[in-house]
Length: 107
Length: 121
Image 1 (cartoon, helix red, strand yellow):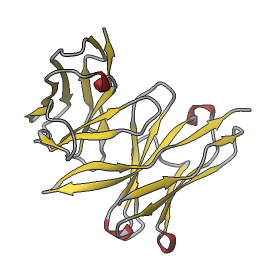
Image 2 (cartoon, rainbow over the protein chains, first blue to last red):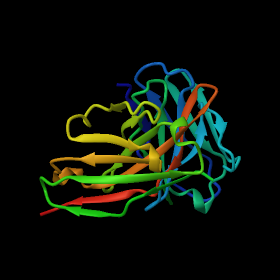
Image 3 (cartoon, one colour):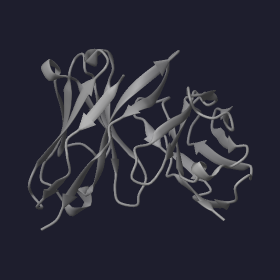
Image 4 (cartoon, rainbow over the protein chains, first blue to last red):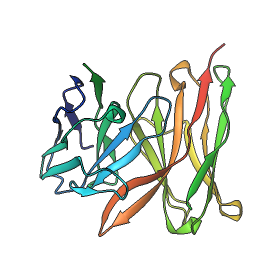
């Protein structure tokens, strides 16, 4: 299986901050990388697919980049509603795998 | 609009079985795969596998073989997850998910609301 490793596991930040979350794959996966946001008690929601394509309706402060093994999710200016847990997921292999998650908390 | 509506919470004893349903609507059921994702309390997302809704062929992730069974009833556009010989560590929220495909890139666009399965004596 392809292993996905996110860093950091948790992060404290303030409204207005620029935040970057990293995801590394155990082998090259091209641009087959998706990002999800999950709030407590809710199902995850896709933010970005194919490494950098913003899902319809997702605010433009979210962006994704990378290819191969290293990827980033950036939130350009944190809003109160962005405090949540973020997961990356590879879809290169049909044995899909998620990263362990990054919990974004209010400082 | 696409909807996936899952069955309600379950409380089961160790050794029992449970069957979670996922009723799909708003699209052609057999045109998209259904995936299952587990989330144990306070933990991350684990992809369990998927079922081809056209052929009924399931694929299971490592760690989800043997006691886990995916099935379909296409006549009622419903997917099922059955877990046999339940253990305390099966306590989790289980999500069904419909994927989407953009230019060969797949992602999980539509999620059910989740079903909490609690295993306790």
